[in-house]
Picture (tube, helix red, strand yellow):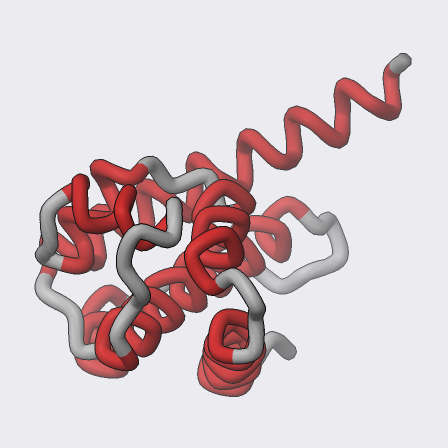
Length: 139
């Protein structure tokens, strides 16, 4: 059975470490952001900062703060968990489950708007990745 909390904690640690120990943290943040299919605009809305700030961090003009890294890792980890949950729902052998929005909002300390945005990004990100894989298989 998939453990949301365990996966979230593992992703958070991995992403935070990857950024902190990177010789180029901005480039690492950019790579992670792109891998989860999030635009700078969406990320800036979720982080409550200007899009230009995200761009300046990614290009190395300014260094990310520890607060930024923590928040970014949290958001990216939640999106990765939602991608995992989408993949599980696509697996024929998996048991059906329903996401409990109240649990998720409380557990991740999110507003309803943030949760809705993250769910939408996670779903879209999973579908894009799934479509890329399916196209590669068919070639």
